[in-house]
Amino acid sequence: MTSPVIQVQGIRKTYGRLVAVHDVSFDVNDGEIFGLIGPNGAGKSTTMECVEGIRTPDSGKITVLGLDPIRDVYALQERIGVQLQQAQLQKRIKVWEAVRLWASLYRKQPYVGDQLLEQLGLTDKRNAWFMTLSGGQKQRLFIALALINNPEVVFLDELTTGLDPQARRAIWDLVRGIRERGKTVFLTTHLMEEAERLCDRVAIIEYGRIIDVDTPQRLVARHCPEREVILVSDDGRAADAFARFASVTRDGSRYSIRGVGEELVADVIGSLSEHQIKVSDFRTVLPSLEDVFLKLTGHSIRD
Ligand SMILES: Nc1ncnc2c1ncn2[C@@H]1O[C@H](COP(=O)(O)OP(=O)(O)OP(=O)(O)O)[C@@H](O)[C@H]1O
Ligand SMILES: [Mg+2]
Image 1 (cartoon, rainbow, N blue to C red):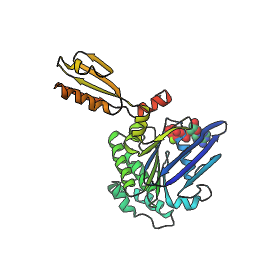
Image 2 (tube, protein in one colour):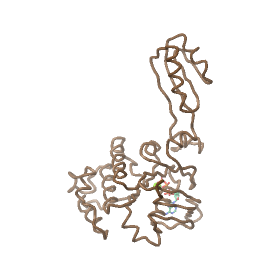
Image 3 (cartoon, rainbow, N blue to C red):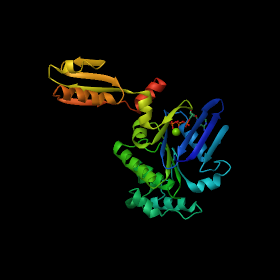
């Protein structure tokens, strides 16, 4: 069992009369990519910024790498990397200047800037002004800046918002690379696909409360165990072959077979093989984190 590098216990944060975060608790383990997921305004950035020591919770306890983010803020800053949701730089700062400026903020030997730019595919933009970078290049620069002090824990707030699918995939690979170098990544996203593909574990947050925490696979298995197989067969015996399944609907030669649990797909394949039934199409429909969110909250994350 790996030890938690971040421990959040019962934190609460209010802005005037608005309770943005109620009694939030979770742990982030060493070396994992942990995602806080939820809709706009759910309290993701507020929670993350309390963990980073940028905001002070009204109550509750937070430990990061054994440190208190408020009391030990300077010690902590040396060991974490932060990418903020609303980050901006001066229009005419050059990429290499930003990297050098950031490196100068840390006491310890900084990560080699050129090597970082190379890793993030920004070498040929070294001399470019910030304002001339594309959205994806800006995001990659912010990730580079978050990594400049070779941090043990990296915080990424909505890192792919506004990017196209291709740029998003490139960023996912970068984040996996951060984990491969042994670091812990704590990110927020309101993109369920991003959470599902990238995170080892996720906490679902809504209206400032954590609804559940687990691996994406276990969340799906726990809350949405339903499976569906859709297949097309012209074989007249198909209906008989599927008679043993509890829920079968037929539309001409198209069959939909529903059931609960992972055995459903294997059982359908077993029936096809037993009766030697040919199919011209075969698909499985598996629930996703999106479905889990819908089930737990009664609405889609985008509503
Ligand atoms: N500085 C602030 N002053 C007042 N209210 C705030 C402040 N920051 C956040 N809030 C409110 O707290 C709630 C949670 O905001 P937060 O930024 O944590 O949400 P989020 O989950 O990060 O949302 P998003 O997906 O839009 O980034 C929202 O209702 C927001 O309006
Ligand atoms: Mg936010």
